[in-house]
Image (cartoon, rainbow, N blue to C red):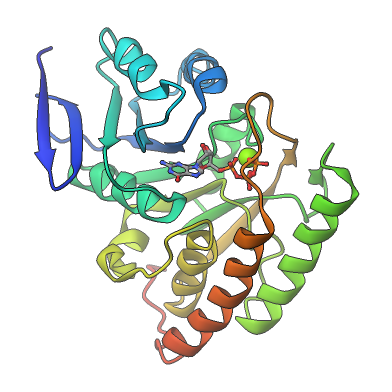
Length: 266
Ligand SMILES: Nc1nc2c(ncn2[C@@H]2O[C@H](COP(=O)(O)OP(=O)(O)OP(=O)(O)O)[C@@H](O)[C@H]2O)c(=O)[nH]1
Ligand SMILES: [Mg+2]
């Protein structure tokens, strides 16, 4: 299958010349994940999930993740790479990946991190649970889930952040609001209007969850054991934490008037 580079603003997208399909897309944002991403892609392939595509959005990682991805994609028609040359940020990268998957005709889109904190062994269960929910969250804080190996401070920050977000944004029915391991049905991402998102960084996780609940979509949680990144440098910083804290207030301020409408089928 011939690969054509498509230029879109600052992004160079490599995609296959195939008709849009109706499968499942896994969207993985990467920044300096050379030590993880190849192994993750192979681990996902071993699950042999039918009609599965992977789209990786790389922000010109200095460690050469992008070049590695191009090599991997050369003989994998179901692996799509979006290279962003000048933009940076977990938030906007994720949105770019979602938009790419929607344009390809994806019916379900799963987002996950590249560093094995989100283990691929949970993918089949996420997909199964999608029969009962519009969004399925891989959750550390339901029975059977766990936040493992993360050290006292990271764990405490995660628990505190969840308490804060659940209460400020009033999404008490979701136990793990900061989990970026999730499945969305296509209809959810279409309703959320991805072009109107405001989060640049990791706060995008809360923003999409908040907007999905405000629009009445059904959220399901399945337990996952989250472990610390397998390789590479942690990107956590106090600045990111403060940004997320303030962004949560801003989300409340900006979007609390979104109507809670029941738009899911059933
Ligand atoms: N494209 C893109 N991906 C990013 C960016 N920042 C982080 N990511 C990716 O987003 C996912 C989550 O980021 P992580 O660095 O794992 O964040 P974290 O889990 O809170 O913290 P650590 O695992 O301790 O680093 C990973 O796959 C990252 O490679 C970015 O600026 N651009
Ligand atoms: Mg991580």
